[in-house]
Every structure is written in C-alpha cells, then in structure tokens.
Image (cartoon, rainbow, N blue to C red; front, side, top):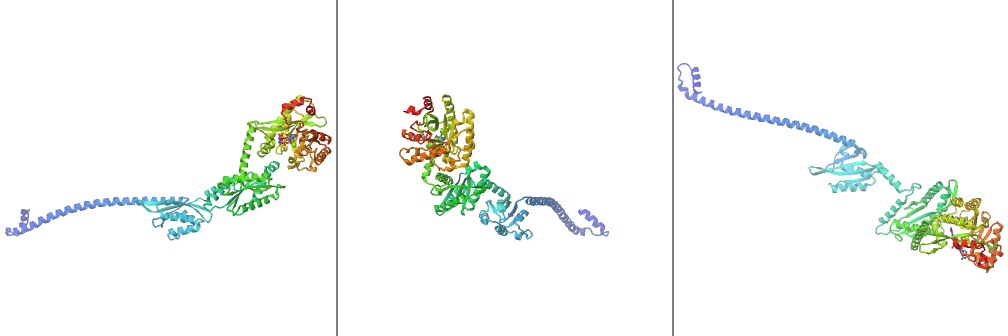
Amino acid sequence: MHKLLKKQIKELLPDGADLESLTPFIEAVEKTYLSSESELQDLRYKLQDTSSLLNKRFQQLTYHLKQTENTKLELEHSLSLLNATLNATYDGIVVIDENNNPVTWNDMFLSMFSLDDSQSTIVISNKAIKDKLMLLVRNPEEFEQSWTFNQTYPDQPSYCVLSMNDGRFIECNTNPRYHQGRNVGRVWSFSDITEIRIREQQAIHKNYHDDLTRLPNRALIYDRINHAIQGGGAQKEEHAILFIGLDGFKYINEALGLEVGDELLVAVAKRLHEDIPPKSTLARYGGDEFILFLENIRSSFEASLAAEKLRLIIEKPFEVKDQTLHLTTSTGIALYPTDGADAETLIRKADMAMYHAKNKGRNNVQFFARELELLTSHRMNIRNSLKRAIDNQEFHLLYQPKVDLKTRSIIGVEALIRWKKPSGQVISPMDFIPAAEEHGFIVDIGNWVLEEACRQMTQWRQLYHTPFDIAVNISGQHFQKERILHTVDHLFSRYHLPPDSLEIEITESVIMNDMDEAIMTLQQLKKMGVNASIDDFGTGYSSLNYLKRLPVNTLKIDKIFVDDITKSRRDMALVDTMISLAHHLNMKTVAEGVETRETLELLTQLGCDIGQGYYFSHPVSADEITHLLQQDSSLETVKS
Ligand code: C2E
Ligand code: MG
Ligand code: MG
C-alpha cells in the first residue's frame, strides 16, 4: 500500500522533486485511508444485518395482516349467520349486557311487543323494554318478579309466562351469558305460546266439564272443594255441599227415551245454573245428580235456603219436545268442617243425606246427620248379603193355599218367598223386599220367583187335575210392561202351562204409580190369558173410579179389615161393601188372614168367594202342598 502510494505520488511530482520529504505526508494519508476503509467495512456489515431484520419483520407483518383479514371475514360470516338465525326463529330474542343495556335483538322481538326499531337503541333501552312490557301484560306482578329475580341473581336462569292484555300468552326464558368466566349480561327469549295454551285450556275444559250439560264435572267439583278447603288456612271458613237428585228421572228416561231424558237434563242444568248464588259452583255429578258447592257460607241456614230455592225452581213444569214434564228434587246437605275435611267425605255424606230425603218421600231437603251413616252402613250390609243371596240361591218359596169358601177345597196357592241365610236364619219378605227394590235386585228376584212357581206348578198339574192356580206377588219395579210381559211369555212357552194357571198379584200403589201404564200392562196380560188380582185392597189410595177401569179378576181384601169382622160392625160393614163392590164389577174376592172359624163363617155368609189364612194353613213347603192336594183337597175336612 505504502509503495504503491509512493509510486503514484512520484509520477505526479515533477522530475527531481524530493520524495523523501513527503514521506510523513504519505504516511498520514495512508493512515486515514486505512481507518475509513475499516469503518466502511463495519458499516457494510451493519447494513447487511438491518436489511435481513427488516426483511424478516416484513414477512411477519404480511403474515399477520393475512390472518387478520381471514379473521375479519370469519367474523363477518358468523355475524350474518347469527343475524340470519336470530331472524329465522319464531322467538323474540334480546341480548343485554352487564349494565342491563340491550346489545342485540331480532325483528321478532320488536314485532312481538310492537317496539319501534326506527328509533332504535333509544327506544330499546333496558328500562324501556321493561316499562313497555309492564304495560302490555295482564300479570305485571309476575313479570316484575321475574325481572327483579334476574337483577338479584344474575347467574340464575329464570322463566315466566306473560299473559298479555291482547289475549296472547308469551313464555319468557332468560339465561345468563359469560365471557372468559365473567357474567356479561343475559339473553332473553320470548315465545308466543297462545295456541298451545288455548289447546291446553280446551283439553282441560273437556276433562273437567260434562259433555251434555257443559257444567263442571265430578273431577272439577272435587278440585274446587278441596282447593277451597286448603285455601282456607287457619281461619276456618264454612262451606256447604248440596247433593241434588232428580226424583223419578229414571222412569222418564225409560218411558220417554234417552233423547227426551237428555234434553230434560240440559233444561234442568240450565234452570239450576240461572239461580245459583254467586260464589258457588254447580256441577253434574253423574246421571241425574247435581252438586252445588257453596263457598264461605255464614250459616247452615244459607245452605238450606239455597236448597229450598232450587227445589221450588225445579218443581215448575218443563216443556220438552212438546211434552210437559214434572220433576221434583231430593237434596242432601253436608257442611264443612262439621261433616268432613275433604271433598270425598263431604260428597259422600251429602249423598247419604239426599238418600234420606228420598226415603222421606222425595221432594225435600235434608241435612246430613251422624245416624245416617250407621243407617247407610246397615244398608250396604243388606245390599252385599242380598247380592250373595242371589248368587248362592239362598231363596226358596213357601205356598199358602187359597180355599173356595163354598166347596172348602183348595183352588190355588200363593207363592211367598223366604230367604234362608247360611246361618239358618229365615228372613221375612217384609224385611228384604223393600231393600231388594232399593238396590235394584227385585227384577232378578221376581223372575226367579216366577220361574220357580211355574216349575212347581207343572209338577202339581201332573198330580192334580181340577182347576188350580198359583199366585205370584210382583213388585212395582218389576211390573213394567215390557219386562213382565216378556218374562211371562217366555215362561209359558218353556213350561207349557195354561195361562190362567198363573195369577199376578199387584198392590194398589203399583197401579197408582202410573195408572195408564198399569192398565195397559194388565190388558196385555189379560189378552195372554193371565189373571191378575189387587193385593192388600183397601190399604192404598182406593178410588172407586180407578177400580172400574182395571182389567183384574180378583180383589184381595187386606187382613186388617178381615181381622175384626166378628167384633166390629164397622169392619164387617166395610168388608161387606168391598165384596158387593167387587161382585158388581165382576170380580172375585179373596179374604186375607182368615185365622178363626168365626171369621170364616161370617165371610162365607157375606158371600166372600175365597179365603186364605192360618185357619186353613200357614205358608208351607211344596211337599206339604202336594200332600194336602192328595188328601181330597178339602182343608176344612182335614181341619175338623
Ligand atoms: P201378601 O202378598 O199380602 O201375603 C200375605 C202375607 O200374609 C204373607 O206374609 C202371609 O204369610 C201372611 N198371612 C197369611 N195368612 C195369615 C194369617 O192368617 N195371619 C197372619 N198374621 N198372616 C197371614 P209373608 O209371607 O210374610 O209376606 C209378606 C208380604 O211380602 C206379602 O204380602 C207380599 O206383599 C210380600 N211378598 C211375599 N213374597 C213375595 C214375592 O215373591 N215377591 C214380592 N215382590 N213380594 C212378596
Ligand atoms: Mg200377596
Ligand atoms: Mg196381601
């Protein structure tokens, strides 16, 4: 370097110039050059480093920019997806932040509550939503409660149903929302459940109402009563349960058909409903039974007043399908808390009281009394043992001879039923026939008696050839045209008996119950050749007028008139009159309860045709009758 510099300087200098004197200068130049050379080199290195660093930074930035761009796109996509989802649902949705201010909402939310989006966020402040909803709902307390709950427990979900003034039901759910573990507000969703509610209510209405009368049914009245009892709490309110039964409705239904029956029930329900006191519930309990529940009565007198009022209302005639129908009611009343602490007990006791009212002659009102309970359990025992008696064939017949007072020979028998319990105890028909009628067993029993009597009669007819008949007692319920005619017809074809070998005994009360119907049935029986007689004549509502219309062959004069004819001129005159009355009407007479020879003689003198009583024979078994029949048939001979 030094030599090269020297050579270049020498060439620049004129010839002969002293080069050596320039050496310090050259050395200084040389030194400076060398130092800048190294600095330059340093600089060059530094520049290289910086450039590669920048390059790297640039690459990183470009990468980040790209990523941000992607994220933005993704966000935009999610947002539009969210908006589309929010607007595609039928639910109204609003999202609020931790300060209770709405963050986002969907169109459905706005339209559901008629909120205005044009005024946008100003209108949709949290407070505005609440205030608006409070105005729109019928149950603001419920909504307020839900709202306050959310404020107090921000981490809890909540639920309520808004009943809107316009009739809609809106189900309202809220859930807290979190970001990185921190509560950042909540999401409210609102669903219009009006249709579901209406359908639910219709289903509930159907389950709780009677299809025919549209009145509340059994299930609803139980609910109402129990609800009122439970709602009463410590302050014991008094309630009354009125059990209203229609008297004789069953017969209307049977006689005039179900259609008339149904229409009548609807009319009764309507009439009752129009006159029930406020704060009371009228329900159809079943068939022809209604319940009126009187809540919070001041005294039992209030209940009896209401019952009396309804009784009188139903007494007025009903016009159904161009017919005028008359009804009466029997009502039983049970009181809460005196008679029971729940709907079931109270209804049961009101029912017992109604039964009591029916037994007291119908068309009246009775309160429940403790004694009725004992009576009812007794009735139920009888019912159960009667049922068992039918199933186990615990009945048998005894026969009491009927004697011709002129010839003193047996001209027939009366079949009299006996019930022999498994214990050996024999029950009189007087004690169980009324119970059998009450519990609906009488037709089964009556048919059995008819069948047994006919079966026995065929045996006797083979032994005994002179005219001889068997009389069977038929109760009112059994003596209904279709039933009795059908049974008798069936028996004749089965046992091949001459029709006049059977006599049907019915009492005056059976005839008076429905005289036209009775006359028609008797006429039909007469056409078939069957004889009929009026039993216990003189004890019922005797009316000369009805007697002449009746197609019957015989009057059976009751024992109470026969008993004293030998001692009382009055009784003798009465029996005498009955005999001549019967004869004028072409009927025969049977004197019941002939116990002495004197009675027998007097009856014979008075011209009575037939006698029946202990004087001749007690009711006896079929074998004993067979025995009597075989002995020349003259009971008077046997006795004397
Ligand atoms: P009823 O048809 O008037 O029968 C006459 C009743 O008087 C019988 O009582 C008979 O035993 C009784 N009797 C007969 N002669 C005398 C007498 O000289 N003195 C006294 N003190 N009594 C006498 P029973 O058998 O106890 O029957 C009572 C009632 O029960 C019958 O009165 C009848 O109404 C009814 N009954 C009897 N059997 C049947 C039946 O199979 N079906 C129906 N539905 N009722 C029946
Ligand atoms: Mg009789
Ligand atoms: Mg009698």
